[in-house]
Figure 1: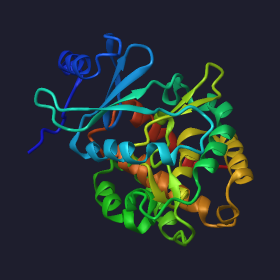
Figure 2: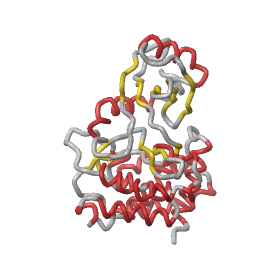
Figure 3: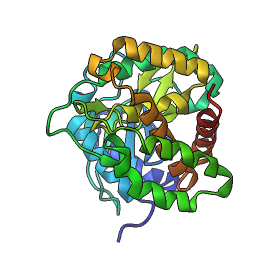
Amino acid sequence: MPRTFLISHSDLPEISAAIAEQFPDLPREYSVEGFGWDNLMVRVGTDHVARLPRRPEAISAIEFELAWLEQAAQSLTVPVPHIVGKGSPFSDYSVPWTINTWTAGIRGLSVPPEQRRSSAAELGRQLALLHRPAPRDAPEKPHRGGTLAQRTYLTQPQIERLPGQYSAVVPVWEQGLATRPYGGTPLWLHGDIHPGNYLLQDDHTLAGIIDFGDVCQGDPAFDLATAWVSFDAAGREDFFGAYFESCREETRLDQDLVPRAKGWAASAYVIAVLSSDLSTPDFVDMAQWTMGQLLHEP
């Protein structure tokens, strides 16, 4: 049975030795860059980063990136990471890991939400570029790109674990659940577009989009949930304005798109985060912010 956390900061010596052995042409300068919900990131020199799953559920995300990242992200015009190599097992770590190009920028979560507005319109345009018809064999992830009803099996148990002070967000999820399911062409989705997975310039304009481990096909409303996760009301106006100027006509005419996106925001970025023991403080802050935006939207 795999251990809960496959790798941690304390494993840096073993990670460094594995990178040096398997990628001898890269600089031998290593430092822990940080960790997200799924991966430990180790910086390699100035131009590369190793991404190593830190929990068993994250292993498939690396495989998805290896198989689909280049095809899914090819329409984007901002920088995205490129995979330059797949790592082999080392020590007692036997799961897939990768070396990626380093995408420079400030993590969106490091910038106060009110200051992210400068990135809103460009993020909306980039998602419109990304949301194009996906091939039939593109990954399907019902709990992300499927219908909200397909996420019920995850959300209901999470609601039961949700601390009482956050229960006010549950009706937002239920309102989304009552909307008409998406019936359009399955589109490419990032699958996890929140402020931890895009980067900003010093002036807080968009610098790049990262972490495509949940790339999949389906309902664009899932990606559009980031409007409440990322921005205040003014930023959301910029975001949706740019998105609807650039998106496909079929998407633009979907009158339930925005209500579904709010339901996704409540389920995936508030209920899921605040009911999980994997949540880091920055993710908890993000979820609390999102809840406030959903409940107090003008």
